[in-house]
Image (tube, rainbow, N blue to C red; front, side, top):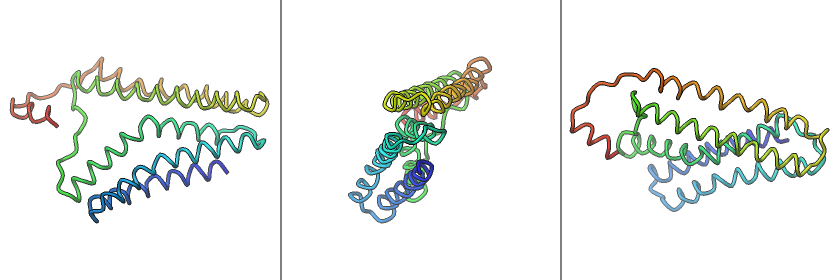
Length: 190
């Protein structure tokens, strides 16, 4: 059941996002667009409620519950960023908006960018562990929640692997070409 709800929430996320942006930029319905985009976090509430109901109903915790916690954590930490990313690209493509911002090409600016992204990953990991710990505490049956503890420890590899990028950009920064002063000022305003 939980796996189906996770898949439905992911599909629902992209449908609501696409419809919300289409309403805003293609059909000029800002109110409907706002309502659709605001309803995106409701999918997370549905997923959280389903996981809690499933566990309280006697289900044995498994990787599906761990995946639900990871999905919720990603959504909390990266959801707004994903919406902003999609909005900028949709506005550029369909509404003549400015070209979307790109991450810094190299140097210490890129290293900072990568470290900030890594910190977000660590925060998402912490939230997922908090959610799983909450489920473990709520069920209070080590036999039914052993898989959740294992999922948590397996998930610890994600921040470790993700650290490769900021460390590599810090130790081996890519050289960036000098830009004209006008271009630097223009980029700083974006």
